[in-house]
Image (tube, rainbow, N blue to C red):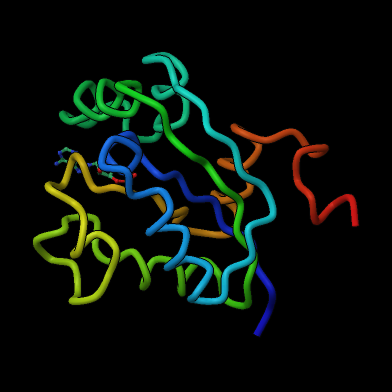
Length: 143
Ligand code: CMP
C-alpha cells in the first residue's frame, strides 16, 4: 500500500473542549506520523477560501462563522493509505451517524461542530495542506 499524506484540522470546538491532546493521542496511536502542525485562527475570509467548494451550500455561512470562531490546529499526516484510514478513524461527518469508537462519535456535538476535518482525497489533501503550510514547514521535506 502506498504511503500517503492527508490534511486534518482540529476545529475550534476541539480546541475549546481541551481535546487537542486526546485527539492527537488517538491519531498517533493509529499509526499516523505528524509531519507538520501549527495553531492558528482563520478569519471568515480564510475559512471561506478553505471551504470554497461549499460556497453555494446553505450551510456555508454557518460553517465559515464556526471555523473562524476560535483557534484551530491544522496538521499534515503521513501513513500508508492515510486518506481512507483517517476518515475511518474520525467517523462520518454527522456524529449521529459515526461508528462507535470514532473521534466524532465520542466527541462531536453536531454536523456543524464535528471536532475534526479530514481531506477526502490525496489531491484535495495536497491543495488543503498548501493552504496552511509552506514547504519549509513540512518537516519530512527537510530530512
Ligand atoms: P468537514 O469534513 O470539515 O467538511 C465540510 C463541513 O461542512 C463538514 O465537515 C461539516 O462540519 C459541515 N457541514 C456539512 N453539512 C452541513 C450542514 N448540513 N449543516 C452545517 N454544517 C455542515
